[in-house]
Each structure stands twice: as C-alpha cells, then as structure tokens.
Image (cartoon, rainbow, N blue to C red; front, side, top):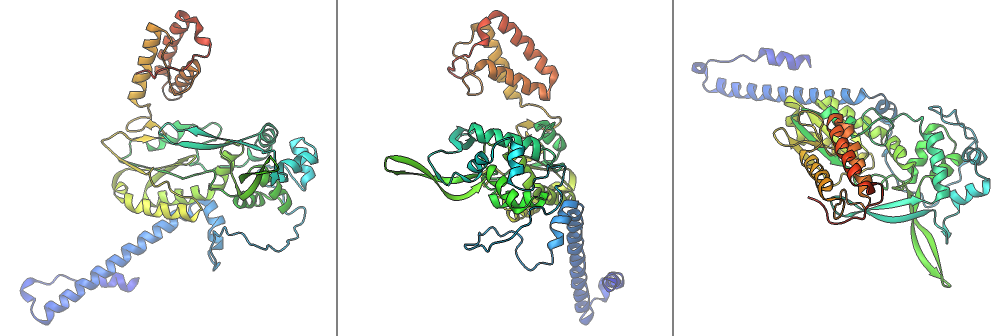
Length: 436
C-alpha cells in the first residue's frame, strides 16, 4: 500500500512541449499505471466499507462469521435418505431468552395443559388419518389472485396459542422488524423512509411456506432445547403437504411432502420473524454500509436513501437479492418497485413523501361513502369487499386514527350522525354494489 501511495506522489505532469518519442510513450504508461492503482484503491475501500458494515451487526458476526473457515455450504436443505441414529441427552443447556425449561415430552404436555395422548395425536398422529388438523381454504387478495390459508382446528389452535404466549413471546426480534410485533404497526415501518430521494420495495415470495420444519427445529435447538423436544415443538407448529386418497369408500389424508410453516397459525408470524433474524442483520449491515435505511414488515422489505447513495440502486438490488437467496428465501419477481422523488412514494400502503399519511384517493372515497350513507341509507353500499358494512366502516376509522387522529375524529363525528339517523347500523348489512 505504501508503494502505491508513493506512485501517486511521484507522478508529475509533464509539459506538452517536452512530449516526444520515448518520453510521450513513458508518460502514457505512467498515466495508465496511475489509473490502475487508483481503481484498485477504490475497490479495496468499497469492499472494506461493506465488510465493516456487516460486522456491525452482532448477531451476524456470531452466527455467520464464526463459520467462515468451514469449507462447506452454509445452507444445505437436502434431507438424508438414511439418517444415522443420534443419541441426544435429555438436557443440553439452559434455555435462552427466559423460555420455559422443557426436558422431555412430559414437560411439553404440562406446558400445554393436555394429556400425553393428545400431545402425541397433535404432533405425530397425522401421517395417514381421516382427521386433519388444518382447515384449508383460499382467501381473495385485493389486487387479484388468492392466498392459501391453513387454519388450525380448535385443539391444535389452543395448543399453538399457548406456545406463542409461554414460549415464543420472550424471543427478541430485530429492530428492523415491525410486522406481527406487539407495539409496532405499519406506521413504524414507514416512518424511517419519510423524505427519501428513492424508496425501493421488495416482496418475499411465499414467506411462511418457504420456511421448512428443518429451520424451525434448528431454531428451537438454538434456543437450548434437545432434539426430542425441538422435534415435537416443530411438528406442533408446522403443517405437512397432504394428498387426499380414497380407500374402501373412505377418504384419507396422507402426508406427502415436507412440513412447513402454515399461513394461518398463531405461531407462524413470530417464528418467521425469528428465523429471519439473520436475514435482517445482513440486510441492515448492507444498508448501513451503502448509506441506506432498511425496514421489514412481514414479507415486505423497504430500502430508502438520500443524496449520493440514491444513485447506487442497481448495486443495492443486486446485493440484496444475493443475500435473500443465500438465506433461503425468494424475491417475488413482480413486486419490486423503485419510487423516486417527485412521484408518490408508498411503504406498506402509506405515503411517505413528506410525512406518513394515507393516500388522498382512499380518504376521498371513504368521505364520499359516509356522505352517501348519511343521505340515502345503507342500501347498495359496500366498503372493503366484506359483507359487514358496519364493521368495515369502524375498522377504516380506526385505521385512519392510527395515522392521523385529527382526520379520524371528523369521520367519527359523521359516523355518529349516521348511526343516529339510521339506527339499524348495528346489524350486519348485506353487501351490495360497490360505492363510488
């Protein structure tokens, strides 16, 4: 490095009148050498800056850099066809994050307040049964398409709620994670990106189903639980891929694929956030190194920048996609948006150009709906695509209050006038034609 700096000092400009023959050729060689040295210095500086930014995240340093010397892939999800038996002691180490100590399956049954037979039925008894622990259906999306939901049946749902309250709640989440977290909302996710020159939105495809049982079991092992306890807990909080077959006029559901996080279970959001901790650490380190800001709400990733960093959007996206792939997730190919200053910039449905606010067209349509109901009544009116107009209106008012309490108070006043004029607002209003 000292020699390179010396080269930069030795090179001096040569007057034009002295340039001739060998001297001119020597001048061109020296200039080319100088440009190569400067390019090498710039490249080393950029790499050093990126590495230092990644190392600022303590979890990234502990979980990734300690395995840097290993000569094998860090993310291999192939299942061994013939796994060798492993003898695991009942207790490995003390649980982390104030999680309850669970030594065997009896402790799990006591934690969930169920007998051992029911625990075995919920965790291990669904490979080939007429009874299924999940009710599967499709939920229509606002922008078209459908979302597959796997809602647990009552007994399993009660067990998952207890696991969430007694096991998963003490687990800390990354500061950039704002989705499915008590005390946080979409406003907290949008606030860091207010007034940015460029806002980049990405979406993780199939966020919950992309997390297999192997990652859930590995995370539980990291918490300090032994192999038996981690395997049982992981099966309680995941769903299998099933196929329905008929035999002797009876229908059976057979487990045909690996188990994954269900989209609809009470434990899936916090488990997904916990498994994505290392993803948040790496993306936050990258954002800091490149001068960007980062936040994540469930499967929505948002980056923003001000000043010169905003011109490095292409480089940022390339590195972000690489990290996401290494962490076992997939970027949705149709949901990447680059929003620059001068047009409306949205983060999780909120406008962040100057302040966090609700889009004006939404407020205008909602105000018009309340005016039409107050004038003509509820017949033929609809809001939000649901059948309960009363609940949809109150939900929208609460949504506005989360962002702008002053504007929400005006909507509440108009809604009280409507309820006083049309007293049947408490009943479930059948859906009709969508209002303008």
